[in-house]
Length: 112
Image (cartoon, rainbow, N blue to C red; front, side, top):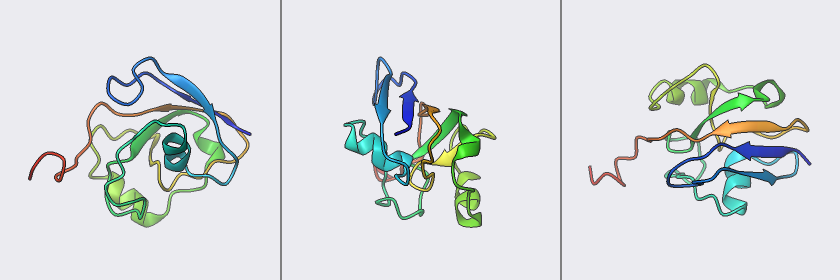
């Protein structure tokens, strides 16, 4: 099973951690199953950017991003070349290092 190293995030994972998840699982599912409650406002349907992550290592092992995901990522806060929507990024056998951005664009949470 691949290991996902999550870099420290002040709200979701203050000290950082390492988790394992089976290949074929999305990064978002792996985080949630390990009690890292990343936002996922659209219930993992590829309709928002709240589950945006930056894959610092291992991005080439993930499935390729579809056009719909790439279009949504254009609206994500802190977009980088290694950005993915965690609900769409499916694990293979390679270990990953993942950073959860400091901010998300979640109008519901922000009372908009």
